[in-house]
Image (cartoon, rainbow, N blue to C red; front, side, top):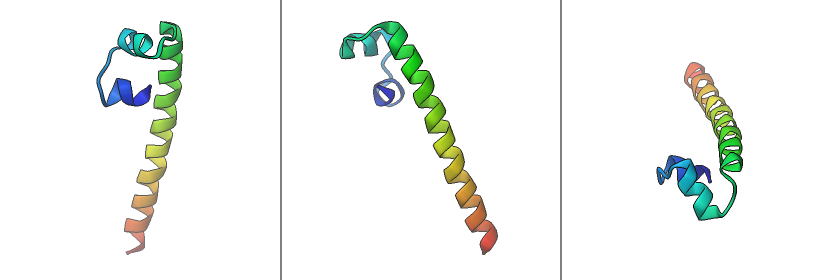
Length: 55
C-alpha cells in the first residue's frame, strides 16, 4: 500500500480499488506506514551522523 501510494503515486481511492479495501482503511494504514517510515529514516540519519562524528 505504501509503495502504491508513494512510489507509484496512486491516489487513496485508486489504492482502495486496487486492494479492494475501504478508503478509510487506506487512509489509516498509510498514516501509520508514513509514521513508521519517518521513524526508520530518523534512525538511519542518526546513525550516519554518529558515524560521521567518529571520523
